Amino acid sequence: MRSNKIKSAIAASALVVMMAAAGQAQALELGAKAGSDFTELDVGMGRQTSGLYLSGNWAKDTKNGRQVGGIGAGFNIPVGPAMINLGAKSVYLQGTTSDNEGVAFPVGGGITIPFTDSLAFYGEGYVAPDALNNSVKSYIEADGGLSWVPFRPLKLKAGYRYVGIDGTAGNPNERIIDGAYLGAQLDF
Image 1: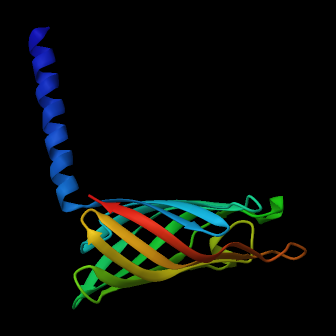
Image 2 (image 1 turned 90 degrees about the vertical axis):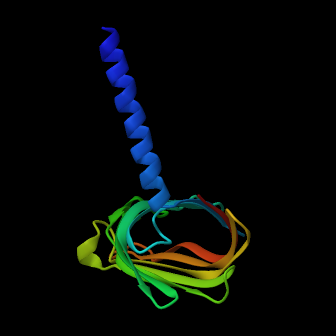
């Protein structure tokens, strides 16, 4: 009985060490953005290094309750000092009508271009035409701005975020998120 507990403790310790080692290779990001009419929470892993990355976000329009949230994965490719990413997402969207509520599977990518060690431009865009969603004609999202690292692990952001849907016949086109924001992110 005691040897099983010891084996379990060793296995658990080995798992923690492997997770910590993987965490060293894949930096974790936690962030938040706030605009005049929306808030957004973000999480990511591996977004700043070449290779595979994972991401997730949830955003809500604080005026009318429209919201969008999703998870994504992709691949980062360094090109000189810049980092290009290509990816796909699975997104839940909720417009003002029940017909503008559903799931979209947008594809897209982005780029980060550093100007200095602490200042960079970033931008990304994703789109899901009719064939890649179940409730609207199309889904579009874009995000871009400047980031500044005053000290590690803090990153400050200022940018513009847009998430919109083109409704099916008889349903409205909607801007779920549309506006400038300020944000902060912790990179571990």
